[in-house]
Amino acid sequence: MFAADAPVWSDQWTFFASWPQDVLAAVSIVLLSLLIIWWRQQSSHWFRITMLTLLAALGMSIGSYYFFEVPVYHANCPAGCAGWRGFPLRFAVIDLRHITYLAPGDFAMNVLTLWLLWLVASVIWRLLAMVLHWEQRSWRSQALFIVVAAILPWALTPRFVNPPEPHITGEPARLAINARRAAEFTYDITGLWVQRLALEDVRLLDPNADPTPDAVNR
View: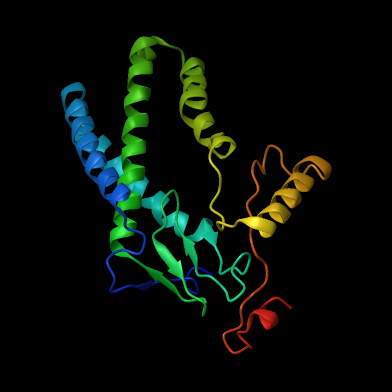
């Protein structure tokens, strides 16, 4: 499965670069430097913590390529629009032939963003552990702390962060909103395991088919 979905590395450095992302990258680098300095002052294991959070960010970024996909879609785009992969930032484009191209710069930016989130989370965990006197607690209290402070926030993230989906307006957007509401409130699809729904156009664009809008919409 994964081999079939392997991307083609693009000669283009970025697909989604913009000045806000450039600003975000600069701010992220500054914050990462400050957080690493903070850890270096707090613990002799600062390098291990830095590398573990980097590896976690890299693993999550690679995983997001496979688990967060917006396929080629026709909603609000009758001729077919390119899809993408990656989360929280997009770093791969799926063209109308369903070939995926990965941009190294966008991928690095996604890793950088996730690394920053991991380091911020690690600092919060460290401060909470200091306040709650982690080392003096029983193993049950320590396990409860891990569940509440570490596992639960990640598990509840889908409650507050929308999954990636096509950006549509007008009548297609109204139909998508109505379908989502029906799924959530009428059919009770969402719950503990399915917390949010995203729009996905299930119509496939055949590269050998008639590319006219009338043919695509059939």
